[in-house]
Length: 459
Ligand code: GAP
Image (tube, rainbow, N blue to C red):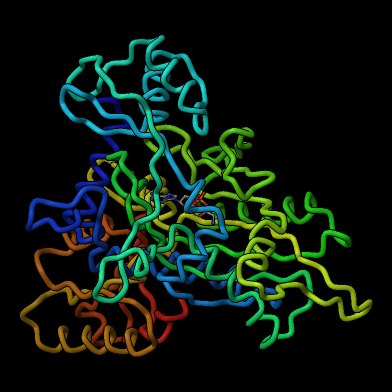
């Protein structure tokens, strides 16, 4: 096992052991590519989304938020092109029935043999030719006996109502963007925004992914956050808007502690680019298994609004308040894979030090901001003072853990593992001078501060 696989395994096991992420449907033997966030994982996930929300929505006046339905009229996906073009290439091993993505099979093989080539988006013929040329064996049974590669659609189908017929067909949303495009007119009419402006949301998207592995990196349902930034192409150049958001995407992720040298922008090739995009760049993070996509930034032109206008017959143009001209706005779309940010922050924060395992998460992201301990468990006045400190902090809305098991050293290490930035101990001296010890996760230094100064320190 390489050091990188090793790190990934350690993170998976920490996540399970400490309640960050559990395999989905575990008591029934699991369901491929699904995971459940545990008590600590959900706190961390919410902290990431809240920080994103604050940075891109609350602190700006040009972005309006929505929360739209997972299920939409099937025409949405026809107009957006997803029923036709949202596809991957699939291939089956005739020997062991292993089903996999043809492009991933080839990329993995070429990578292992130091023959780097990006084959995402290549046609079926090219994929088949590459598999045959290199005689790429099945990674499960090592035989070479594949079906021809064929396209399959990533949209999850479901049925509304009680009849499973064509009329009741619906899709779980394959991207959250469409909910924002189809509400464009509603936002125009209720908020009266002036171009340029954005419509944002965060929520789950669903894709029928067949490639297994890499933990929460690729799952069938995952958390996304994104916005559509609409602008008048006659007044602004798409390149300027694109680069403006490119800088801010980087600023946000580095503000969470991911160093710049672990991130790399990558331009999509013409073949790889999604059907709606005239330019796409991914921000890749150096995960344990290589540089892989964390965010995407796309210039969607007027593709979506134009197609929804045609299909719905509703005018989705914007009227310029100065000139009265009607225009279909163009769109730059910054997309943030929140589940992947979660994984990247765990990768980035995981340290094995001499005597401890520590998750150096940014204080904004850690599940708990502090833990409160009574020095001893059997001294009633110490325990009740510690409870007082704990209650005061949670009453201020600060996420705090309580621990009175084992000795203080063990409690510190237990909090280090889950990334708690501060541990507060109430001891005998507290009863005399209302001070506590506060211990810093990263430096492991302890100092005494007044109880009345704790919440300031945590902030
Ligand atoms: N609206 C544009 C859009 O959805 P995308 O590149 O298809 O763009 C956006 O997906 C982000 O979602 C990606 O940058 C990636 O971080 C994340 N993502 C895509 N597929 C995923 C999956 N199966 N599991 C987890 N995250 C995924």
